[in-house]
Structures are given as structure tokens and as C-alpha cells.
Image 1 (cartoon, rainbow, N blue to C red):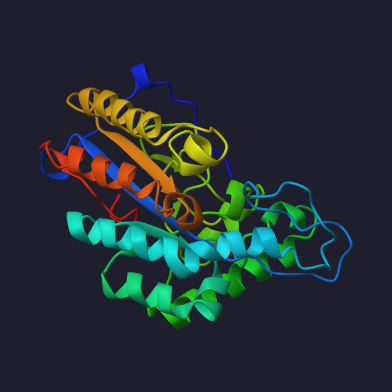
Image 2: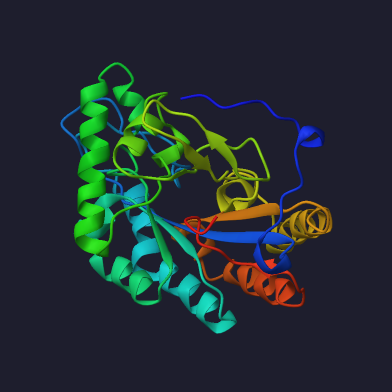
Length: 287
């Protein structure tokens, strides 16, 4: 996999359909953590912990597991309600284990016609663990895509790796299996092309800065500070988009953004964006 370095001033101007200035992607990351594995090394957390002191991987870490499960039981439904009230769609990423173990959530997203994007097998099972076992990595990718198609009812078109940790071969395996976009990289405000041995992919960049983990769980922002950050990001990209299209991705995790005391930030941001013309809420596949 490789891509060209093309600095912004050297690019042709890009335009979204229908004169839109900005594509806003509201990403709900639907993630599943295994409770234990047959190992003494702590499980990879795949995100910040509520209690940071790790336990052996073969011992249930109930405090962190149930904190994350709050997102499945309560938080995701609060986020869905906010989006429904605003009439705004999301683009949801999903671990395959969400399809097998939390089917009601996947069905709710699918019934709304929102996008679903494969997000690896489980959140704690990262692809870089297979950096020197390409056949094992290919098997994880194919197994994830198979479950996605069986449960969602259509073949996957793209991928976001858990914890944004692909190997150099991951895009090759995705193109090999019919995917057309890849979301793991953080290096742009516009889509761009990747070259793989199995054909091209479109990189639809993600953002770790505009993400509820880095705003709230890691960043420690107050509700109003987080909302101000979202508005500032939108305002600047919207202004730039008058001349050359931009993407704003806001990554959310149901156990973080779905907390009762944080949901107002999402509602207020959706209301703010609704005041502007030329805003597109696309599926990544449309991009």
C-alpha cells in the first residue's frame, strides 16, 4: 500500500455534490470487548479505561467491561434518540462481535438506513498483533466481512480498524475482498487515493482530535468546552469549504458520548449545524 504526498496548495479544487461545502460524518463506533482471553497479559484496552490498573487477560475486568457495556445498554440509544430528533443520519462502525452478541443495536442502525462499516472482529483484537502473520490477519478480515454480510444483509464496502491500527497489508486484503474505502488515517481533511497490489482504495480520513475520547475521556473538557471545540472545527472547515471541499468527522463512543451529562453537547451541535446551508451528511461509501 502506498499513496502520494500532495500538499494542499498543489491540488486541484474538489467539489461535493449539489454545491455542499462540508461533509459532516457523525461516526458512532459500535465496539465489543471480550471479557477474557486465555492469556496472563492484560487485554488490549482499545480505548481509555474507567479504572486504569490492568488485570490479567484471563481474569474478568468487570469495572471496565461494564463501563463500556453501558454504551450498549443505555448510551447508544440516547445518541440514536438525539440523531432521530435532529433528523440526522450517522455512519456507524461495528466490530463483528456486535453483530453476533449485540444484534439489536445493529438492527436498529440498519433499519434507519444508516451506514455500517466493519471495524475488525473485536475491539481488543487489533490487526497489528498479526503484523508478522499475514495469513492470520487475512483470516480475521475475511471472517469479519463474512459476519457483516450475513447480519447486515449486504457486502461491506469499507473498513475502519479497531484503534486505527492496521498493518501495511490491511488495505491489500480489503481491496482483495471488494472494499472501496479505508478510514484509518488521520492525515487530511479531504479524501485521497491509496494504491494497493489489488487495486485502488479511497482513504476517507478519520479524526482523533474531534473525538469524544480526546475531547472528554482523555482531554477532560467540560461539556461547553467540548461543544465550543466542535463549533470551531465546523466553522473553520465550513469557511474553507466555500473554495475547496472539506470533511469533518466526529467520532463517538456510546459509553462516552452517551452519558446523560454529555448528550446535550451532541444535541446542541446538531442544532447549530442545522442553521447552515451546504452541509452534507454522507455515507462514506457515497464519498
